[in-house]
Image (cartoon, rainbow, N blue to C red):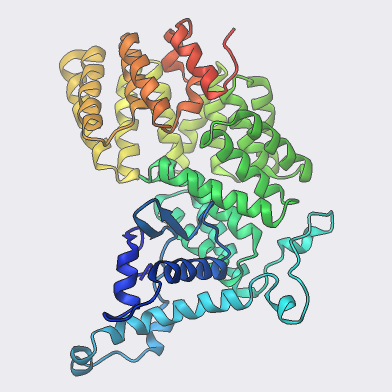
Amino acid sequence: MLLSRPNGVLSRDDFRQVLWPDGVFVDFDRGITSAINRLREALGDTAENPVFIETVGRRGYRWIAPTHNPEPAMLAAVPAPDEKAASASPERWKWALVLPVLALVFAAWIYRPGYRSAKAGGAAQPPSSSAGSALAHRPANREAEEFYLKGRYYWNKRTPEDLNKAVDSFTQAIVHDPGYAEAYVGLADCYNLLREYTLMPSSEAYPRAFAAAKKAVELDDQSSEAHASLAFVSFHGMWDAAAADREFRRAIELDPNNATAHHWYATYLMCVHRYPESLAEIERAQALDPASKSVLADKGSILFSAGRQQEAITLLKQMEDNEPGFISPHRYLKIIYFQTADYPHYLAESKGEAVLMHDSSALVIADATAKGFAAGGGRGLLEALRLQQQRLYDRGRFSPYLLSETYSVLGNKREALLYLKTAYDQHADGVSQMESNHAFDNLHHEPAFRQLLADVGLPPLP
């Protein structure tokens, strides 16, 4: 039932109607709770930090992991129904596709950590947290490892389509081995980026990233990758700068050559105005992973925030020329041009990013701002931008954080602070970066702005 309606909420009554025919009198509530608990156990999932099955308060349950269509080879092994058979039993074809998935779930339960030792008379052992826990990094079977490696391949490409493929691959790795910590790390890393590279709201992405990262650390406390993922979401998603700093340091202590840990620590340090350290960390990340496009793009962003504007633009333009389909250079150049009032280049980058993101709302904004600029120059562009953003925001389709940026650049401090406070109340994405955002430079002396910095846990301005 859950797989048939991914991301849809199924009520307890929905389950009752399917699982028990009319006239059967049993304790439905207890039976449903027991079934959900057993399914979570099979998947290595928890109600507190769900990766697969989410409890929706007073409404029911929802499958939040990606669904996976059967491979062509699997479909070929299932005989296609003829019209007569299909009309006689419309459920048969559906179950022919669902049963292989259920078989994987059952296998995951049978081979979950501790099951075999428990069957043999021994107690289930928790994952080791000693220096010898390298075994915890080893997947239980070849299929899990192959899905994990495929996920990392897609994740590194950083496109909306590839990130969704990566989520699917990491999920399949977990189904094949629920105790595979690195697969949970991969899942967390995907959700940490999906709210940036796709239209997934941060309110959905960050809780899933946090749950997966917490699970990874629980399975293997010696994993540098798990601590790095937890650090990232702790800062950007949970707004816990102290925990983020602690987790980043732990990740680098466990593996000084973890390029991703140095990379993400660099972006965290940029957000808290520690620019010399940030530049040192991004240089270290680049030395460890010189082929990484995302490291190089974030280096451009850090250079701009640190006051080295021309270096940043040169670097990002080179990347844009070499990797025209990579979103980050377009996005960072758009931000730079907006904050430096280079509006012709801003318009070009806005449209380029919107096309790559497949974001129809952003394309509407880009077209409207181009018309505003043609009619009224920079001020006309900003007013057109504000108008379009306000319309989308009023319909619940735009971030108050981005709207506050526009009001601030327009010089309307009152509205800028109002929407920034709304962004804080709604836990909107981007708030953790407001101290390093040059669009808010004119708010630095406002008591309300300084209070918001304190509320988020960011360091005070000088």
